[in-house]
Length: 100
Image 1: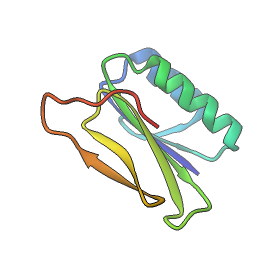
Image 2 (image 1 turned 90 degrees about the vertical axis):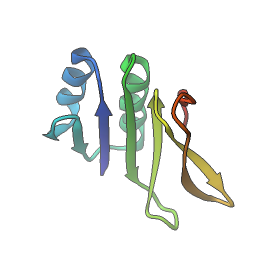
Image 3 (image 1 turned 90 degrees about the horizontal axis):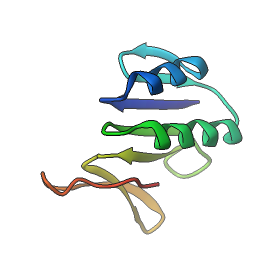
């Protein structure tokens, strides 16, 4: 299972995501794909997000049971803390960049 949540995504990206995933709410897409297909979708989101931002989460065999990555101008950035992925919240004006 994977979930993609977008904010301020260009129509071209939203259309591309709708080809692969089900849009259950505006900007929220879900689906079940292999790791290879998930990586292809994540690459397209990263390349096409422009001024928006996105988070991609998927089921993973780790302690949390999931993993995630962010891309675009996002104040919430993933940070590894002793093998556990947490979220750092940057102050306004310190927008993050693309991250995994």
